[in-house]
Image (cartoon, rainbow, N blue to C red; front, side, top):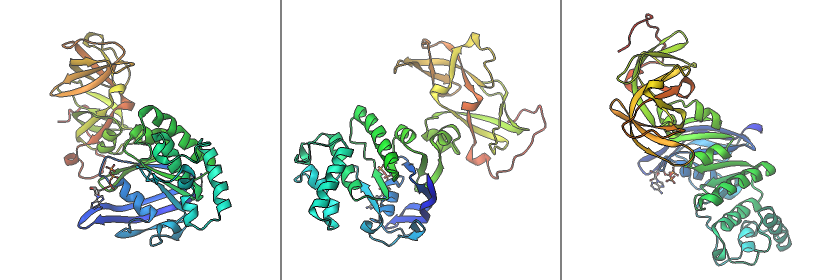
Length: 377
Ligand SMILES: Nc1ncnc2c1ncn2[C@@H]1O[C@H](COP(=O)(O)OP(=O)(O)OP(=O)(O)O)[C@@H](O)[C@H]1O
């Protein structure tokens, strides 16, 4: 990826009437980068995409392409193309007419349109369908036509608003890879809105996680998955098990106090700015290792919770257990099934344990040291 800061947003805010939807968004995207805007429903993903495309004027801030301010340019003068979730194809037009639509608006001559449409059809595997009305196409074919219409105008930037969400699960998996391969081959810069975590993970160079109109974290898929910067991001990225603990930093370790279901133990700090006091411990069901209470051996650094199996199911590949740990219920996967009522141990390896100071416990990001050997209540 070349040209850093190819597409830049600085201090972008947007509101609908009195409702603030985006606040102070700073984002810098490199040429040829594939960025996923990931967030739950209503967090402002589509609004951000529409600000980029020029369909909405931001209430503050600026949008720049190659250091040129495009904030107040109309959509058709930004070198961008938007693919809508609904595809927004013309049902009474043929595949060829739909793909050529943007070129016709630009006043391109007929022969030029025909050549470009043929090129797009062959690129997207739509050969032979040029005369078909789009109302007589499958979902996957419509999605390709919408992509063809967007790419036909040779945009520098492709904006994708959940373009795969109307496809059935199996087609969606293959289209993800096709779209990503096409984007790489064309070297086009892409911003892809999705609420599907796995889709963002497998497609994007960088994931930007939005929460209530603000950027909660941005980084490579591996970064946001393994090093979530907040409890919100950890939960959003699948670490939904949560247990309240107490602890304090000591050197390069964080010492966790004994709790109702765990013995005191220490885990590496990994540079996290944790302070003494209550912490929220989060982990994924698949990161936990389940064994019977009497076989808890030292399985490596991490924390082990004692619990009782409440329910077990088989979603495929592993057994998923609901385990009562103190007054909480957590989910933990195992290679074998434990019966409800079984006393078990749930071990969470240190590198899969995400710790965050509870909001009330983190007034200032200072790292305090504790006298060694103390129990932190
Ligand atoms: N035209 C509008 N007028 C008023 N409020 C709006 C309008 N469009 C969107 N909103 C509100 O702005 C917020 C952000 O909407 P947006 O469509 O950007 O969210 P999103 O993250 O794309 O959600 P989804 O994944 O459900 O599409 C929501 O609370 C929504 O109700």
